Image (tube, rainbow, N blue to C red):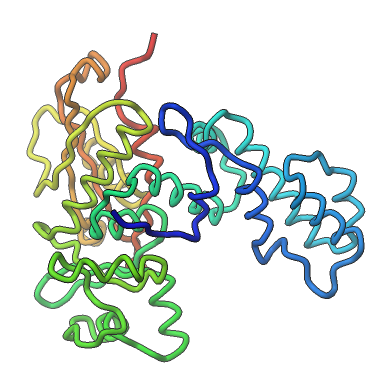
Length: 336
């Protein structure tokens, strides 16, 4: 058993009888420590009083007190935080609040959505996840920078980590890889996570500095499949199996879900018989085949048929997965 991502806020939440997460005052108060909300030397007395009040009682209605804050940016930041807080408290569980975020226009910043996704994945994975599953799960809330080597190996590194090293001029493994398009992985600064060195993940789980191979047949893709299976089961209460697929060779192709905007566009075009450019196809990173354990969990008109999934990088070689697509777009039978 390993703990991981300790700073994400997961340990500040409670669990209900179904294993879903319940928001606590301690968790809400922890969000006030974000740099956008933490007081600075220039903060006025009204802002200091507001922050202290919310720390002590984070569910208070403070609209009038926010209006008294002198700094315009600070007022705007508190308005965003309060809207996010209200979204969290609108449902009995964090899972319910998360799903509700995507049932209309998403009106909270991506950083909050990513944090919720991380916390929910931490709950889904529990304390028995493998290191590769935990690293694969990072791809669902942290964009990845993709490098394709000369031998066809597809490598994924955390995008923010790559940018940080690039700005500092301290290119390590993935920096050289991205600069030269196929450099030998030779430094320890950004190691490639494999089955034979997986234990290094646990002490570095919040550094986001481990590279994984997304080449077909590599264990990181299998780990991602297991994570997605558990994600679907936790939220939707249905059992599915997910495996990588080489191509869609199916005359009865009836359903698909893109795991990101790029893949969605390609799958939609292929399904409708439209032309897809060579450049678009070159960005496709992996196809998956999802099957329901119980056909009765699916819409009657497609019951028993596979659902095809795909992920793709964008023009800047970034992979930005949207795990909510798996929850909102599967062909589930209508609940009575």
